[in-house]
Image (cartoon, rainbow, N blue to C red; front, side, top):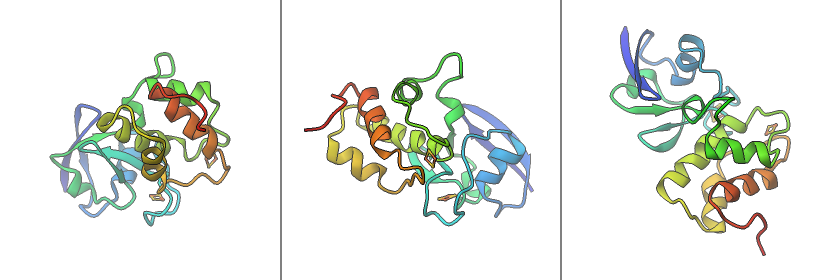
Length: 156
Ligand code: FES
Ligand code: FES
């Protein structure tokens, strides 16, 4: 069926079965390859994007259910030449190792900072809890989020 989804402020018309995961459409049709397929089960967060401002697993969301909602992917935050604040903070803190989890991490963190620009350490950790990093760069990821929020890099 013909489906129109709004991604990073632009409407896109795609042909897809309604139950197709949004992740497949983002990557396969729109060539937005930041979000990754990890588990496909809502258990890793590699596919996280924002839907109406909330972090969401795009591997679980049928594309038909994404119609009429605001989808935001990591590509919507900035470019290689002009990265967004959070993207820049991840780069400065060298938070990526293999990088597979990073787009999902950034989009989940962005959802927090959009709603709460100065979160507490507890709020950051609780919010980021669903996203996994197999490389174990969690401490650097947390530093990057603190940096983007203008908080001290280290917790006491
Ligand atoms: Fe979506 Fe793992 S790929 S949560
Ligand atoms: Fe490799 Fe997170 S940097 S999975």
